[in-house]
Image (cartoon, rainbow, N blue to C red; front, top):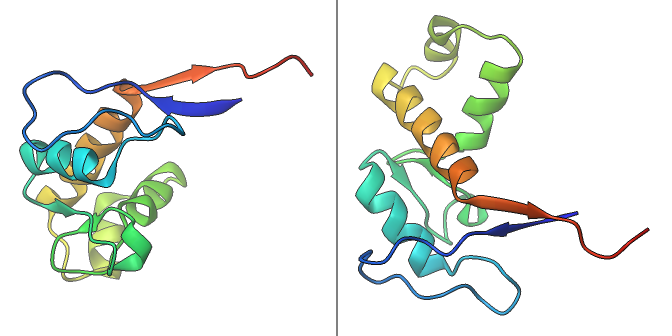
Length: 110
């Protein structure tokens, strides 16, 4: 299986259609995130373009992984003193948005 982001809703400025590979363009994903949260940023020069908490090098995926592993918010905040509860909430909103805009399709029969 591969993951193919669904074409975003019309009206997102700066948003281009999907790339031929089926992936969202960098500009499109950045436009979605900008409208969704001022706390998440994607910059190709920071952490290889992974979504991070703005002003840090803390990937959203690191926060989500720790939450999935059962870490408490307080534990995460102790481990990353520069984070706030609003940053963790923004990471969860980002994950929700990503899931809602992803379509999983089977590619070829095995």
